[in-house]
Image (cartoon, rainbow, N blue to C red; front, side, top):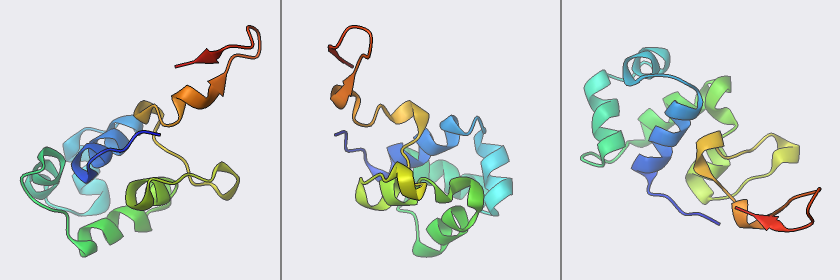
Length: 100
């Protein structure tokens, strides 16, 4: 199981959704400079900023992964595609060997 810093997680979410910083900042109504500072780790994201992000349905699926390092695909809680979350636990159906 991979553990990322919040700044890295935010960037992975944005990149997995194929958004640039400007697009995401406009979508979630957070100033571009604040988003850039959150992603770089220069500034800690406020609760209000997190609420703006995870209130949107598009990003809600990443909430548990972002906050708790937990996923529950059956409940719609996943890790971003770029996070490589749990790759060591994946087994190839064809080869029967672990991958990742």
